[in-house]
Length: 266
Image (cartoon, rainbow, N blue to C red; front, side, top):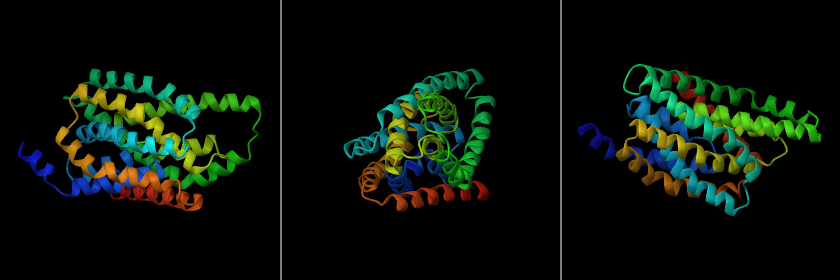
């Protein structure tokens, strides 16, 4: 209880929520990729607690960001629906896997730590290879058959994200945006960001409620983060529609570089 109160009174927690919220609103990146490592490395929370709490934090904050992006017409609901078709069932099955391994034993916590590191490595790689992937995507054919193939790949990407996000809370933003940029290279960045944020809401909600059931959600920590993040993500999402596309892409790359640096320093 003493440690919980110390974290609750730490002004850096709401400040961290505010900064990460702005980044999520602007780019769709930063929720798990930044917040979970911050909670583990800077504030000293156990990985399972950081992941479980961050998932519900993401579900709440990205709901606000999703509404603002919808208001500005930044969401492609067809893409969002295909992602959710793969991710939501995968999230539910992954929660059952964690329960089977035992969240209080060595099994589930060890898996969470390993997948968290793996997800952060993928996030760093997405920064290095993203431009090359976009160049390849722009050179491919765009016939009707390929569009059907792209739809199936979107569902598959959603399923992969469902597993990664449920175990590590990382991937809904950074990896999701990179995957969508590859699958839909002609879609404006703001539409990719908006669609990715909208998809993250049902995914993180299902995964977060699953972690609540597993007992890995810290309510006091959740409230502390929300105090700062709710105004932050609304502010970021509002300005995302007004930021030039090139600047938005540059900011996205900077966020992913920060995540890669966190991984190297850890």
